[in-house]
Image (tube, rainbow, N blue to C red; front, top):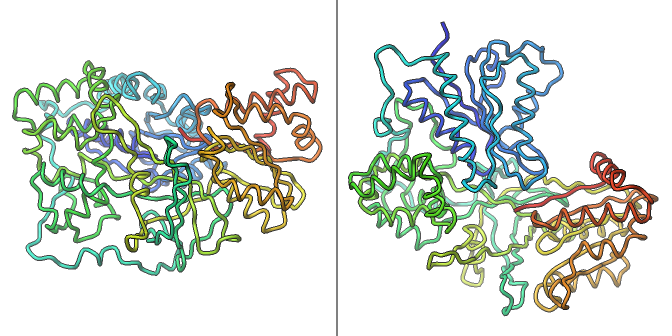
Length: 595
C-alpha cells in the first residue's frame, strides 16, 4: 500500500520556483497529505530510488543552465552509470518556470522530464511549461497543470476515508516566533566582519567597504548609471574575467518603518525562531538567532517586491472585513487573475503597498506567518567590470539605476540598484554583503587568439574586466563594439578605451544611436566590419561575445553576424545558421544577456 507522502523538490534562482513549490506544499497539506518541500541540492538525491511521488519545480537560468540550488542534483542525475530502471518505483511530475523570450525556454524542465523517463520513472502528466511572457504570467499554465496533477495524484493517493480537505485558514504556521524580554547583543554586532577561511558565499557573504560610487552618465541624461567600487581586502575572493558578483540588497529605511507601523511591530524587539511541530521546513540559515525585527524586515523579508498570487491566498485567510475578504478571495481565484494583474503586476504595486490597501486584514496578521507571506530577499548578480590583475583587492560594477513610472503616483524603483546608488562613502563607512560566482563567459588563454566583444550599455561591464585582464597578460588582439544613446551623455569608460586604442591593445567601434537622424546600433557596425570579422573568425579562430539587454540586441547582432558569413563566406542563410551553431557549440560564440 503506497504511503500518503508527497515530496516537492525545487530548483530556484530568483525565488519563483520556490514560491510555487511551497504553494503546492500548502495544497497538499489541505488535502491531508504528508508533504516535504526542499531545494533539490538540500535533498539526498540517492534517496530518490525509494520515493513514490515527487513533484519537481524548476526554472532555467543563463543559456539553459540549472539554478544554483540544483546543480549538484543535476550532475548526479546525469551520471551515465545510473541503471535504466533506477527510478521504476517513482511517480513524478515536472513543472517548469520559464520565459519564452529566451531561446532555451524551460530547457531544464524538459531535459529533467526526459531524463526521469530514461531512468524508469512514470510521469503522471506531461511536463508543465509556465511562461513569464503570458499575459497572465506563469499562473496561466500553473493553475490548469495543478488541477490535472491533483486529479491524478488523488486517484493514486485518495483522502483518508471520511475526511474532507482542510480550509486554507486551518493550516498551521511553519514557524513560531519567541519574543525575548532583554536585548541580547547590540544590533551592530550581528553584522561584524568575520574572517572566513573559505571564500564568501550566500550564507557567509563578505561585508565589502564601498570605496567609490560615481555617476558615469551626464546629469542631464535620463538614465542614472553608477560605477561602484568595493574593497575586498582580506576576503579570500578570487575571480576572473566573465565572473559575476552577487549582492543581496536591503529594504529602504522608510519602507521598514512603514511596514512596522502597519503591522504594529516594534522594530527594536528581539526574537528567536523555530519550526512548528507540524512543519517539515527548517529555519533559514541566513537569519541570525536571536534576531531583531528591524534586521528581519530590513535584510530578509522582500516587502518591496510585487507579490505573487500565493501572497493573496495566504493574506485572505486573515481577512475578517467583508469587503477586503471578498477582494482577496477574488485575487486568489483562477477567474480573478486578470483583475489581480491589473491591480498588482501591471502597475508593479509592492507587497507593502498592498498591505496599506488592506488595513483591516493587515491589522489581523499574525507574526508567525511573516516568513510564509514574504519571500526572502534574493541576491542580484552583476557582471564584474574590473580585473584583479589591474586593480588588486577591488571589485567594480556598472549599475543602471532602475526607476520608472506606472499609473501609480509614486515612481517605481529597483530595490538593489536604488539601494546601491544611495550608498555614499563620503557620509561614512558603507558596507555591502557580497560573494562571487563563476560567470557564463569564458575567454581564451593563448596570446594570439583574437577576441571580438559586443557590449552596448552596461553590457560592456564583463568586457572591461576581460580587457584589463587580457592586456595585463599581454593578449592584445582585442576588438570592442560599444553602443549607447549619445557620445556626450552615456559613453561609459571612454577615456579607458581611447587609452587602450592608443597603446595598440584595442580596436574600438562605436554606435551612438541618437546622435544622428537615423538610429545606429552595434549590429550596424558589425555589418560594416564584415571583411575584418570574417578574416578573424574564419582564418584566426576568433572568439565572439555578446553581453547586454536581452530584448532586440542579441538577435540583431546574431543576424548581422550571419549576414557577415553569407556576404564574405558565400554561404546560404541556412549554412550561416549552421556556422553560428557550430561556433556556439565549440565555445567560439558566447552570449550573456538579461531582461
